[in-house]
Length: 313
Length: 313
Image (cartoon, rainbow over all chains, first blue to last red; front, side, top):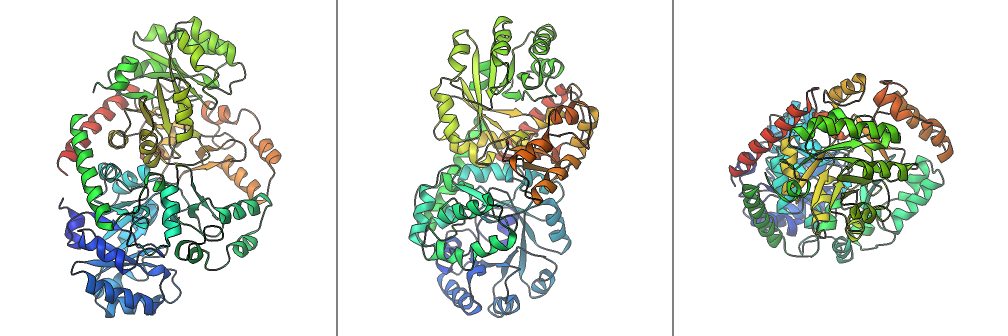
């Protein structure tokens, strides 16, 4: 399975594990990299010193390439990026912001830069800024999400039509069949998020992992669009938000309901009532908590089976 | 390309043309059936006597199987169904309602019945009622749409896991690559809507067809969820709806803004400002108005190319 993505990152399989807040620490990232994919640390939920610790532990746990996902809205982003540069991280995925600010500065340091987008417009913008690859993430993805609500099935071929750099599909991919579908649509590789939340190595709270396993089709919703659209499980906190909408809540009232540290409370501390539980629609297809290496092996096996099935069509 | 779907309908290609309001008359349906797919008349925008005329003209225009799509909320549904039964239509697709009411009555008359759903729950319900196949339609589809907002990439494998009858994928399918992706995900066939709006034979107004061709990624939105969720182009009418939301409009006020015959005004009469223009996200990938037979040939050609590309992965 060698292609543009495996060459770009010097990995064995074109599978990237998403750098998710409260889930993607050194244990998960190193396990995925050791299994031949690309593990990413999720810096969005880490203080700079915490990220430093995770980078150092990840370097000890694997000799293979891994990267860091950095949401550009991170308040202390200069310090975070300095840690990444100083500690020899060679791959950075940027998201939730303008790729102009950091792409060339990181590339000048010899770092491979990938930007996550949710539309054709932002894919072109990222390419203009000189990124090495683009992740195009569809509406079905968990967590923060684009305003155009374009789904992976439409977004990937639409981006592919105009993009010259390699394209990674994200959103709705948890099986080898979905991985093959994404590649049929024009992706060179896939970024998998939700499936790795339900891994043994994810730092997510076990209560949250169990909810992901239990989730059925229709269990998530994209909400809080007036603040920043986010896909989450429909738990008690979500019902609170819905009740506020029903009463015609203002943006300020929504902000107050959201409050601070809801995501940590839900995904890291395991408060299933009051916490925010960010996960993709594809949680409907996730039925177990297993080691990351087994997830990787399953993806490859299903991918190969799906390929054989195509030959019989 | 013989499979469960081609056998079920006695057709050559597992491609169904959606029975869309104001687009799917006898010219389009017969052209698709003559090209080896299954053409559907869209009864949702036809008075009973108009449907009768379209059935009779379609029967003259093709010797091959065709069907009728009937939204179950149709006010005069008994008369409509009687016309379908009396005139020897052999295939009925029901949508937007409970499959319990009509499935067995139609099947008793020897009619093949397919029900359109947007969730696993409704797919199982349709199967229980004895339908011959299910269309599972994702969030990216144009027109009326489900409340769970599950995308085709997630919905198809989720439905496939539990469904015994044949499965037809809909929503976001306008190219042979997307068709193959849907079949990789577990579909036995595809229902294609938006692509056929931009056909020479569609009865849609040329102004609307031109807008579909012009539409870019992000040009549609699912809105009016408090009434019945509908995906449409973001035109002046859509902006009116958005302005009403911004002012905190009630359901009654939204109903008043929608008014009557908006869909006809937009899609059939070509009023791009005041009309409702229902189309799928995949309009982003549609760049020409061509005969239905060319659309069919293109789908097959792209499908075969995509299959070959898979073999090289």
